[in-house]
Length: 213
Ligand SMILES: [Zn+2]
Image (cartoon, rainbow, N blue to C red; front, side, top):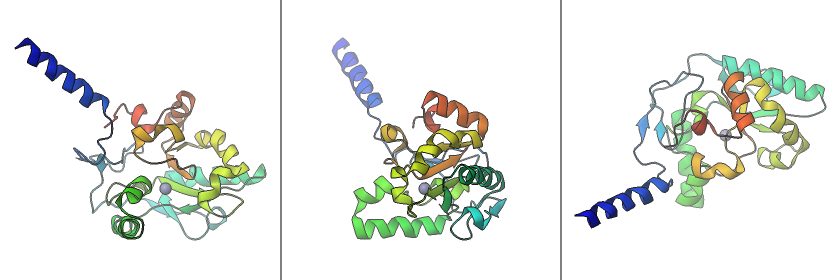
């Protein structure tokens, strides 16, 4: 009897230590319009969710008409303006994405690059933070988002984004928590208070909200 008890304890321990349970026990997001909403591989937005206050970022700060929620728009414009003033370029290139758009994008990656690739760099429908209207992919002086990590603009962004309420959402060493590979171009608006704490403590939004799956 005691032997089985120890065995069960051991199994629970191993299970608890294994964090790779992405897309399992998925929960429906209940606070989609909360600035601190958590959307990831274990928390899904409803197909019908569209933020109520989407606004266009001034095209001075974006590559074309791009929409995010009003609070994120104002913060990003201030950030991009200050970056320019200091000689850097931080421009929005991908912002709000609808449920249907994300579904097509993910399926495109699955068809062209396979499931593993698609899951590492794209989100399944309802699981993209871009549907919250609080996420912004940026480009710098090189003009493509996927080179942003190599630019001086990124070095500026790393230490200034939080002052405007944005966080680097998918850091290099946190893939086991976020479920996404390193994305130096993807920023998430969480408000100044949360952004400062996340930046100071070098943690993720999951850790800040104490919800690691
Ligand atoms: Zn992104």
